Amino acid sequence: MDSLIAAAARALAMGDPLGALNRVALRDDAPALALRGIAMAQLGDLNRAKTLVRRAARAFGPREAVTRARCVVAEAEIALASRDLAWPTKALAAAAATLEAHGDRANAAHARYLEARRLLLIGRLDDAERKLAQIDLSALTPALRAIHELAVAGISMRRVRARAAQAALARAEEAARWARIPALAAEVEQALAALDTPAARRIARGEERPLLLEDVEALLASKALVIDACRNLVRERTMLVPLARRPVLFALARTLGEAWPGDVPRDVLLARTFGAKHADESHRARLRVEIGRLRRLLRPVARVSATKQGFALSPRGAREVVVLARPVEEEHAAVLAFLADGESWSSAALALALGTSQRTVQRALDSLAESGKVQSFGRGRARRWVTPPLPGFATTLLLPAPLPSG
Image (cartoon, rainbow, N blue to C red; front, side):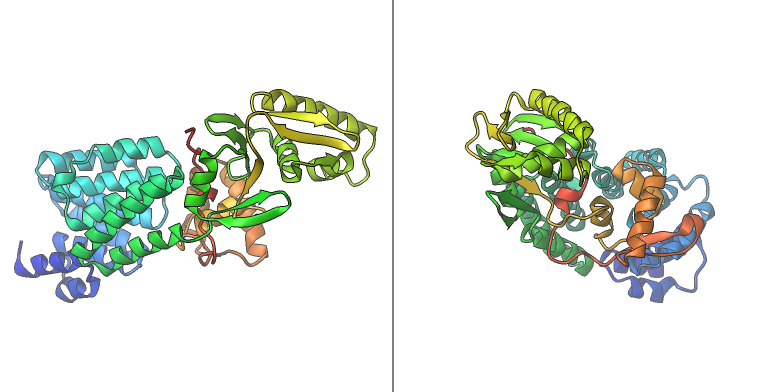
């Protein structure tokens, strides 16, 4: 490695892409192309970065397995930054194995972190944890240790474990301080700020108030019967009644939960659940059927009783009933939650992360664009969607992941 390449590599490791470009901007040999690509990625020109890294991978000879593997890792990182979640994970896993076999443990660990971060984005938390467990922490540089702790914190936040997330972020902050990379320190600071931002709302007895992540954790561990509108389920500590695939039943449960300890008139239930402004006998018959289904499902944790005016919910063992709602509720909130990270997303990546069809996501994006909440750039497969970060609340509970069962 010549002196200019070595100096450019050190500059990139310290988060100084302009310093790296000053040394290799006019060179077209394979190492210089790779470093220029990484520098352009750090500067935010992801399309140019991808082109340069691919040119570098082709320029390296077939015997240069390690450098080609590093190019694969760099391209995967660029794809993750541009929220292209469909990149070939098998190629990245093979690159990680190659780097490990040749003693490049730092870059092998970095490759596994990219896999873990992708899994975290699409809600596969168990797989992300297993990926992190494969990494030898003793071989990590301060920068990689900060990235490791950020991933651990991300999983903890998605599992609503505020104390574990706080501890991981404290370790990440210390590691970022040693790494002396401003962009990494800023990412840790942003994650810490999320813990001090409302993540949900508590609705009970006609009142509502915002909750931090630690408050949500305490609520889920309390003796309350929680009607969880962030995950569409009813829970009492470890007993869960999932209703995500039963939207009518969940709407009934939420309406009854918000009215507790009072009851809800039948006309109100019909209007909120079925949108029936002028209910007839068929609506009332359907309400009786759905109430019967809800009563059977909730039997382990609550009773649904008929009253003179309508129906009432009463917990069996819990002390109170609380509705846990999203911090901001509006149509297509889940799509907005992903776009709120400030990155540019394709509709295909959003569909993969949300576990739904691309056509459904595209309809949501078109609706949000009409109201001025998102905007797009590019055409065809290069089209990306962005929105400014939504102020005043954290998106942790809007992202797809099961809440802890205990």
